[in-house]
Length: 400
Image 1 (cartoon, rainbow, N blue to C red):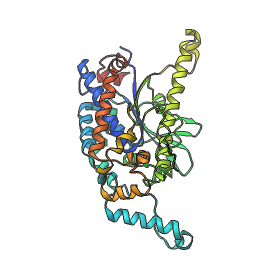
Image 2 (image 1 turned 120 degrees about the vertical axis):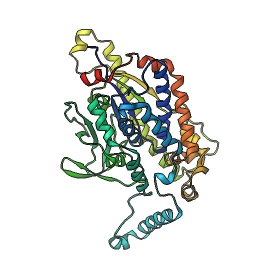
Image 3 (image 1 turned 30 degrees about the vertical axis):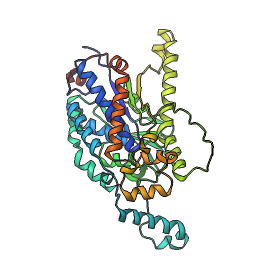
Image 4 (image 1 turned 180 degrees about the vertical axis):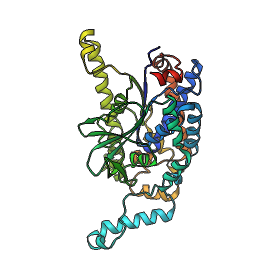
């Protein structure tokens, strides 16, 4: 029987920035189709997602038996998505949120014990829960696992309760939960709650209670404290991984302005978001590259005795600054959101990084989809080399 090489797909977080991933996947699908792959074949038997990437990952996993159809559905959603489908963006919602926070911050010491429902986040993302319940068919996930077109899926979140980084994974394979420093794994049935928890950007969206080892833990965005974003795919058996980022892995240093002013709240928040969503992935990729290089220099005998193994990787990340793209599309946001973001400096160029995570509007998401497509096409030869193993029939996957 032909040896089957399991390919892992890693989709990172970033709110509306995750639309970039759809463009990359469309380009890859087109390249593989031209190379002779069936449009229905899932190229990624192991799919791992974090934050908004967890939503994309699950959507693909739910269509593992027909990858092309699932990708088209995901494209339609991202191409037409609007902010009100993700969080309440009307004036009343903004007034309620603003008034609640203002009251708590200004008079919290006086009114805290009389407030029955204290604000838990800046935005109410209940519309996102409705959208996910509407568009995701988890029976497709079960079907993919049963047919062998999907080997495993993993979704990550961060526990506010214990401070641990949690990975929830679903597979039919005999894979024991792993325990690492500050990182735990649990076999589970992936559902909408896991996705809401993984995508709960701190302060922006509310934390979500998740069952962990028989108890409840309140969880937030999986990008927080994610020390090893590539690790879940490797634990699940991936021998090579495709990583699609939602921000530039190596930012070009900005020129220092002639007049340096105190940073706005949005500028500080955007900087913090970049640390959460981008830095750990860049460090993990560097670590894997270093390990691969070290293993390549070892004699065969020593390499076979090592617990470490080389992992073939391909990274595709935005070639342009997404915050600069966001600056061009701020006006597409609903007026109440623009007004609120304007108050903290997020509508200015220096604070637009924060706005980019909330810009769930077609002008922005479609430009990112186009950018993702172009960036992947620029790496055409690398993509084809990465998938050089060729066409694999689902029966081969099931028997491997």
